Amino acid sequence: MSAGEQPEEAKTTYREAMREALRDALRADDRVFLMGEDVGRYGGCFGVSLGLLEEFGPERVRDTPLSESAFVGAGIGAALAGMRPIVEIMTVNFSLLALDQILNNAATLLHMSGGQLPVPLVIRMTTGAGRQLAAQHSHSLEGWYAHIPGIRVLAPATIEDARHMLAPALADPDPVLIFEHGSLYNASGELSPPAAPVDIDHATVRRPGTDISLITYGGSLSKALAAADELSTEGISAEVVDLRTLRPLDNEAITATVARTHRAVIVDEAWRTGSLAAEISARIAEESFYELDAPVERVCSAEVPIPYARRLEEAALPQTADIVAAAHRAVG
Image (cartoon, rainbow, N blue to C red; front, side, top):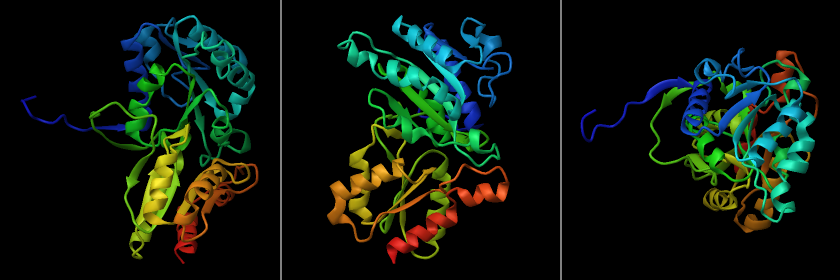
């Protein structure tokens, strides 16, 4: 490459970007290892770790028994001993079997030890619906985990974030949970070399606007961007904010976007009751009430176990048309 020439963008997928992030982490630090159900010979339930066992061997890419509590606990122990484990849980519903380890150990040991026992653990899991996996495998429970002090919760919504969020997550002294929406694995696009390390502390504006803010994360980002495109044809300028980090929430970004547009729609695939959308709505009311020209709108999943049948599943989930309708109500 000649001096001053910019590196070319590479065509890739969200899945491949995650795999390259894992490969880079394993190459960069001998303390890093990956473990979970079927991450080795099978290549991961969603194919993210395909080929890594052959490249790094069974000491670095470890298949585990079907016991989330056991292998998450083993990851916590390894982190306490100075390793940098990456634990993969197939889907978020299975993480409930390890909730005791995550809440009562990973999130609390630093505090309970007076700062003596950091737990630099990364836990990756698939979240979200839209793939006809029925109720048990279609949960969006990242908001539950965002309720817990002592951990960081990330939701990479783009190929770039899938590729580059893992490194700063591994560098974090606290446990980090990464929620990968299952509908994103096949998403493809151009991946540019990063100009700087990915910021896991702040939200980002994916599309600027002046009339209304669409605040979302993860698998709902593409729907919010599609809604913004549709609204633009009607003369409504929608700003799209990708939260990226669900704990800690970027309060400044939320208040800043509301100050610019004076209206907000929060898009959250979780159930409406007790949701992350409810928390963001409350924060807007507390900190930006006098900036609002209309009530905050929330677009969430229906309060039902996610159905298996495709049309029922689609009806239960937030869709682009629902976001557009909520924006219309806010704009009036």
